[in-house]
Length: 63
Image 1 (cartoon, helix red, strand yellow):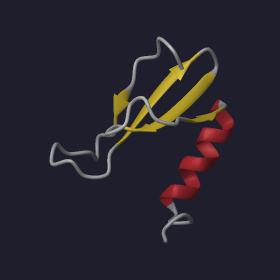
Image 2 (cartoon, helix red, strand yellow):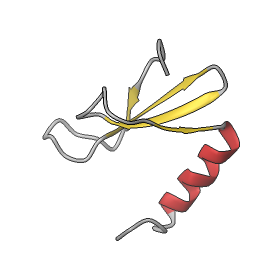
Image 3 (cartoon, helix red, strand yellow):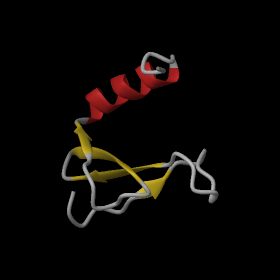
Image 4 (tube, helix red, strand yellow):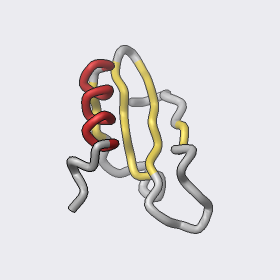
């Protein structure tokens, strides 16, 4: 995702909590931890990201 512009979630705050960032580049979408911008990035196509976000909204990944 080199050269991509990353945007922080509108639900993030500045208190150091769990924040994610999203970027779009060359047909890919990326998600990363805003506290670790050089760390791993989850990469998706447009359709796959929409499916992932829908599952996250429904609580599928809540532990």
